[in-house]
Image: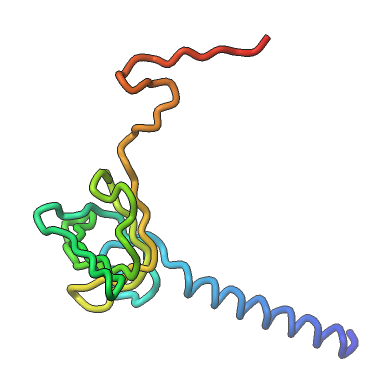
Amino acid sequence: MNTKTIAGVVLLALFGFLLFRSFGAQVGGYMDFEEAERSGANAHVVGMWVEDVPFTYDRDANLFQFVMEDENGQRRTVRYNAPKPPNFEDADQVVIEGYAVDARTFEAQHILVKCPSKYNDLQGLEGTPVETTSAP
C-alpha cells in the first residue's frame, strides 16, 4: 500500500473513534438515580412526580423544580431551567434527561411528559366509539 492509502485509513479510523466517543458521551441509557449519579454521564430517568411535594417555578430565574421518584423508589429534586411542561400534573410518567449533580439533585435538560392514554383512535369523549367513514 502507498502512503496516501495508509494515511487515509488512519484518518478515517481516527474520525470514527472521535465520532463514537463524542456520541457515546452524549447518550446515556435509561438509568435510575443511583446509576446516573455513579456514571456521571447524561442519563434518562423514568419516574413519577411526587405529588405530596409541590413543584415550584421561579420566573426570574426561569427555574422549575419538583421532586421525582424513580422506578426503584429513589427520590431526587429535579431542577429544570425552563417553564413547567404542559400537562405535567396529568402525567402517568415523567422521563427526564440530564445528569446527577449530587445525591439529592438532578439537573434536567429535557423533560418528556407521558400522559394517560387519552389519544385512543376510536374512542370518543364519552367512551363511545367514534364513527368513521371511508371514501368510495
